[in-house]
Image (cartoon, rainbow, N blue to C red; front, side, top):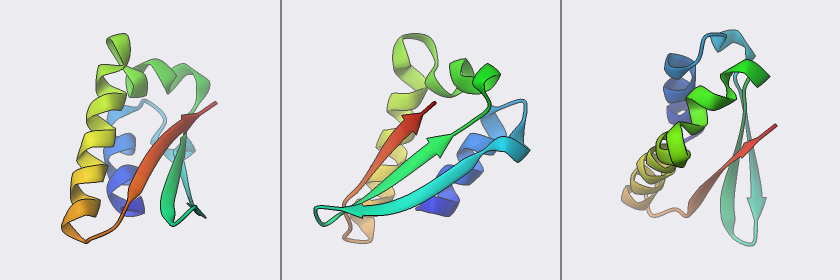
Length: 76
């Protein structure tokens, strides 16, 4: 899942070298934290959060195929 999120984020932003994805476990669920350059936050979130929502749906659906629970958090 981490690789998928990294791939998607790097293709959306202007500064792909500043994309950082960290993976942690919280209450039996994998949490992926996505950090991008401040000027790229708008591209990752999108208008009214549409891109962020689609990223979360994509990662969640891939995780379900593997029988896992994964959530995505976009942090500053």
